[in-house]
Length: 484
Image (cartoon, rainbow, N blue to C red):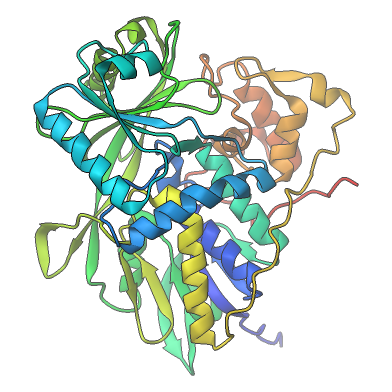
């Protein structure tokens, strides 16, 4: 009779492989904490992390003295070094918060005072003439602007994947297609049921399940914070104008509601976002004609020359809208990261909002310190962040000269590298290489990339999916071999 296999035991189980989960796993692994990362989908960064403006905020939006402020300021200073070591595209282009009337002017002045109190470097209030010198394409109706030279932007998928790969290189184990379906406490450990049939044990839990974080917390204990999903729509443009935005542009409106943000992306396009509306359960990531038109009109209002720009694509993502269960009508403003802890070593990060991407690494460091305290491990110095691992065994071959994605000039060698690094879907390849993000949106290259995926995974080409959905047939981590 076959003996039952022992249930594996880890110091920490991190639930959710988004940006925050990947950075928590990385920082725990840097402290020699045995870590298991559990992700219900087939890849990392497929949830909230897949759609955002990718802005590294300077810190003037946050209340003075708050934890959120200190994390944002530190992250703004230090994230560039992480991106340099892990070869993540990072662009410190600066930002302008602009207004076109008295109501907006008052908000800009308030943000300036708040930023000065927070110690944000290089802040300046600029009148119309100076704004138009910095950004000649801006509407002449602009009245006041706040210049923040420390604002930056990154490639958000590269950032999350780089953190995940580094965590794996430091010993973190990842299990994909692994949904946590039950959590209970037994003999001093957490016992996590995976996909209703497998078990793992851990001394602590970090719940980074994003839009589902409240539900994961509810598997163990009723959460004090719940989440209403909110849909955010974005529009990607290819500017065909001499004076396209060179800075990140935040806008204050004279009407109710928030203005849009224009972000010059690290790959030369322009991202406009976001228009928010309640999520629809039947089509949770569907964009709307009205949302796209509003983004285009607002972009054109801020930069009239953008009227001739090509619309590359629109897309949408879910964002958490947290509320307290004892006050369901009171919307939480998110002045602090919303962290709830149990006395038994489970930390749930529920409703982390902007600037979640900016603070992901710093939150990961904070959480790792709390886990070490619970494990009574002291506060040892973290291991050095490893340089990016190389998979490019095709570097000297013809694969690196054969273009597969014409729009973005992505080669077959780069596609094969992405598959070696863990991509199992077309979107997984896209997140690692940028393939399919050009004007043709993959109509030329998708079939060729699918064939390479099928070859590597030893499955029929018809089983290769765009985004994975619920069809997961692999349990994998970063693969391939390091080139000497």
